[in-house]
Image (cartoon, rainbow, N blue to C red; front, side):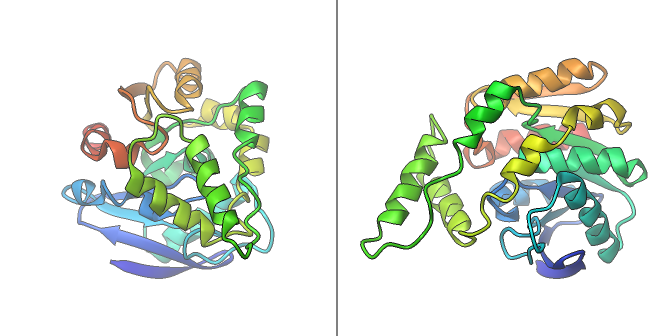
Length: 257
């Protein structure tokens, strides 16, 4: 089921499925809640799965300017209020992990269990690397070359990719918001994620996969909080939900149950 919820900056598009304890999934940027589509039916067997589009992405209204990670975390609280959800399980992937961690740090009473999937606890060198992910200018050209440039940039940003359908779907999602696709890149780099990790009180799982570009950063986060669990799938890229949906959903479900 798809619906819209009134949020801090306008309407927030949400996809939800299933019954049971509420599980909110926060996507990486510049994607949308549809990132979790391959695993949604699997999770919906045991949970009420809620996948919002982060404001400014997918079909959600945008803030007037790029907002901080803390602003997005507080905006999520308003979305949950609008859905009548006082307390939820929360999973964030990459950018979504930063928002999820900030939410858990700022609103601890609202998080039952937390999964941080690909944690952007970055070194200066890693920040410099990820800044190269600001793709080619998406200004239309008569020969369509801007589309080829964007496609080639997406391929280059996902070494080891295997799922052509996922590449196409995720690029199309980005192209739907050509003026805003990069809006959360710098806020992630600027956010003090370490401060959030230190104060989170919810039972937490750090989740990654050995082929993704935040694997080492995720291990660094787990070393900060050895009291938390750690799980990693073998191989894959940052499109792990598409590449290994059954294994991904199994790790999530086992921790939450």
